[in-house]
Amino acid sequence: MTRPGGTWQNWGRSAGVRPVRVERPRSPEGVQRAVRAAVDQGLTIKAVGAGHSFTGIAVAPGVLLELDDLQGVVSVDAAAGRITLLGGTRLHRIPELLRPHGLAMENLGDIDRQSITGAISTGTHGTGSGFGGIATQVRGVTLITAAGEFLRIDETHNSELLPAAAVGLGALGIIVEVTLQCVPAFTLHAIDEPAPLDEVLDTVHERAAEHDHFEFYWFAHTDVALTKRQTRLPESARRRPLSPVGKWVDETLLSNGVYRAACAAARVVPAITPPFNRLAVTLTGDREYTDRSHTVLTQSRTVRFREMEYALPAENVVPAFRELQQLIAERGWSIEFPVEVRFAASDDLWLSTASGRDSAYIAVHRYWRVDPREYFDAVEQIMLRFEGRPHWGKLHSLDADRLRERYPRFDDFVALRDRMDPHRLFGNGHLERVLGS
Image (cartoon, rainbow, N blue to C red; front, side):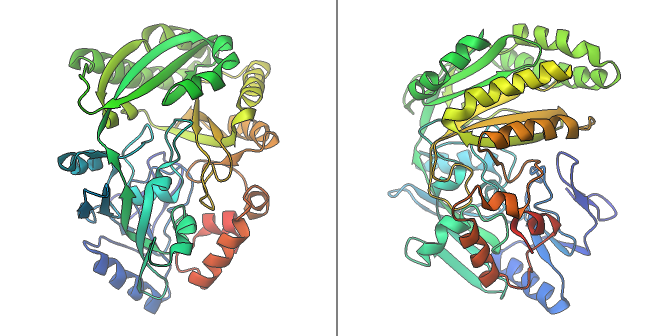
């Protein structure tokens, strides 16, 4: 968000900039004019969505484009199950845009505040060993190039570029339209319940294979995993949603209100974290309900945090997790945020964290007012030993040389960027670090 005085900060308050100017285009043609003006004035230009990336990927020192006014439906092909959206459209708006057509997004992450462009460009994913990240739903994009021209990329136009552009890091151009392949609307039967952590780790691959969507959370200083499993049902299946009061108590009062107070208090008295975590696993994570897909897949998170997440070959998730457990115990850290474990299917997108391999994700968090570096740096070393790839929108320390060895198509992407943006119109310091200069 851009504050009075022109300073932009991301949601996690881990990146910020005072751009030369801020523009708010209301149409793809407005984006085109902004790009051409930036070229004429020798300024860099970048678009930002909701600012939910924790890295500096969206930092715009030159011209910052806020795409809040570039939202909505361009077209719908209900027979083919496809929708084309303006690039700034927020994920949480898409279900209602799809609903009149009997469609839904195939999968979503657990947060839906991002723009569709930001979500695909950074490799945002949900969970489910049979489903890819959101970018795997992309069937076409329209972007404004460094030459100030419209470029359509889909199955019939420049199709060879789609595996690169779908997770493009904002480095190839400014995406103004996104075409998604949707599925018939569906409901999800959800069961959230605690289970012994060792039992979950011993059976995690079976659990991920048996359920359409499976994940678990672990609060440090406990021996319990909070599991979430979901089964896909037809839209016509009877809905049994959470009661409004129960949902408010669980998600607003406990998961956000009480939790925010506990995180703030733990900054002053870290010793309260272990007993609070043990209390948390007894108060939350035990419920069963059936509701529309997007309602089950996403949740409200209002406690501000910072996050690092690594994608591992799925077979490496348990040994990596056990090393993480041991690390926290040996260092004697009081960690207030849970560790999250999710799954995704292999895909063929060049810079997808699941490119070429079935993947499991381990995410670690810290309250935004706590310095995460010591914890994140130590966890990162574990993830790297287990062939991890960092989420593009979350904190990590890797540069281009270290990322190159983790992505078979890395040099192909860099070569494409050199061709499409030779003067780094869409560049910034973060992209220079992760892609090279």
